[in-house]
Length: 213
Image: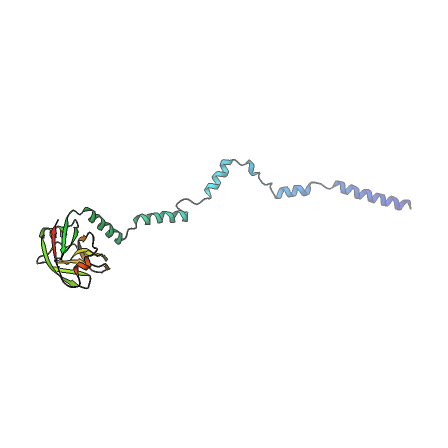
């Protein structure tokens, strides 16, 4: 029995000695060898982090949004239609006019403002005139002069009641209605206040006198 107890004690002592001889930190050492500890970001200088962040941003010329805004601004500044140009030219012409002509139709009198162009000036040189003007289309009276005026015809688009124009080189046209047209005319002037013009002209031909005021 003593022998058995002695053997058991010896075995337990052996196991105890084997346990104390194994390296305790070997697992941690192996882990540290394979995986380096993460760097503390708070220790990185602010200037270094700022430079890295800026280098990751797209440049101004590569940013799609910026390019669209730039292109849109250029297109907007360059955009000007022919219609707007013609309207502006007409307004400038009306501002520069100086000649006023009295237009007498029966007992009614109207004021015709001539534009500042060569054709209108040539017409003014012919005054005074009394013309037997013919009717056409229910919106105009016209008369063919014996000699032509310096025409500068252009598409007018919209005609207004009271417009006075030159068709071709020698056809004077006084409009008494507003409408759209695809024809080209040289603008001579406009009746300042065309109210009552249509009634004065009537539906047939009309004798019209033009005289400088």
